[in-house]
Structure formats: C-alpha cells, structure tokens
Image (cartoon, rainbow, N blue to C red; front, side):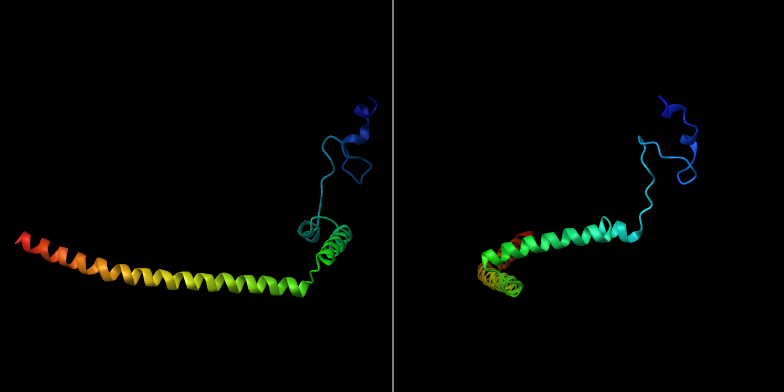
Length: 117
C-alpha cells in the first residue's frame, strides 16, 4: 500500500508525521480529565441531562429532595432504634440464661472439685 512506504510514518506527531491508526495516538490527559472521566464540557452536559431525567422522575413520583432526605433520616433512626431494642432484648436473654446456667455451672464445678480430692 501507499501508506506502507510513506516516509512521514516514522516521524513523531507534530513534526510532519502521523500516528499509525493501529496503535492510536498517545493520550496526554490532564488530572482534571482523568478525575472527571472526560472533558469538563462533556461531563457537564451528561450531568445536566441526567439531572433533568432524575428530576422529572422524582416529580412524577411526588418526591422532593427535602422529603427524600427526611425519609432517609427517619429510616436510619428506625434502624438504630431497632438495633438498640435488639440489644436490649439480647441483654434480657443473657441475664435470664445466666440466672440458670451460672448456678448450675458453679454447683457442677464444686462437685467435680470435691471428686478430684
């Protein structure tokens, strides 16, 4: 092919050469591009589109950001209260079980120590 014998192929880009399409151009992306995952304008447009889409769905469902926040807050409070109630019940179970198990264990230890003598 013609491109195989082109003398510009070996030159670096910017000095009259061009990049071999099989290997692609070396990418020098800034830290901002790497952080955002693309150009700032493209990311802003994507975020704007997604914001409109999510806002429309929330409006159809009758949700507002404040209502969503308070529902999440109430859910977390209920889960915390449920956890404390569980620990409270668990503590009662431990005390009730210990009231039976510890005396039996103590008597068993006393009897086994008297047999060892």
